[in-house]
Length: 152
Image (cartoon, rainbow, N blue to C red):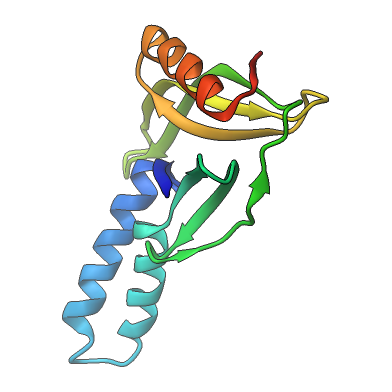
């Protein structure tokens, strides 16, 4: 049995809203012009693409993928080996956009992520997005126990 975790929109909140607007306007205009199909295609790509992680605790495998158009998963399964470790990273992203009056609007997003590190400690696979440090530590302990690997 595998568990899916959504990590966030690939193009951020602004790209997602623009994509949904393009998608809806393409649906309305498809009756009047066939070029609206391009709007539907582009809008569904921008608006519905997100990144996710799928974990199979029984077979000890993980797959980090982008879900294109909200339907098609990319990425390959990676076996979890005993030398791998789970750590917590604080994620800080700021999504920026500019208004018609050339004013900058920033949307800061802060969270904690459980991350799978390889034995060398350089390759990272994000596993789950968590709101607070305490919750992240509890989840880290639980996942280390279930996957039989160490903490970082």
